[in-house]
Image 1 (cartoon, one colour):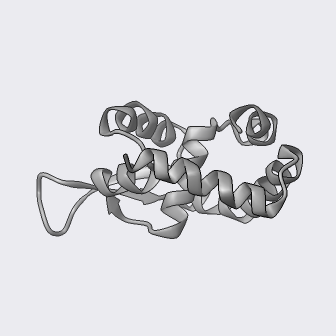
Image 2: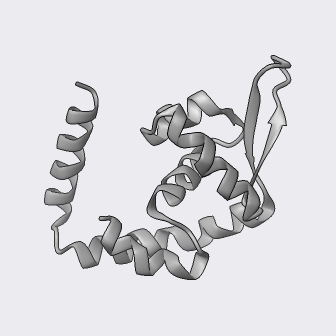
Length: 118
């Protein structure tokens, strides 16, 4: 999937993993790094450099949590929110290029989720 997404994300200067994190934030913005890592299926160690790059690109910012001075929330910037308008076209194109039927794609996602949970 990474190879399929690479040329589609190139105009946005995003990697597949960065795109996954943005998709998670489009679903729920202003969440902790731990929650974001869990939603995106990534380790906290992976998140730190990834979030730093997204912040340098102006797509996210870190804010202090209202609930805890020690915890930060990840918030989309207007620029990060703008990319969401193109996300459906990107995922649709990636799906078409995968050559999988909708049923096959759903089975693949289900199997990958099963592996992740073990």
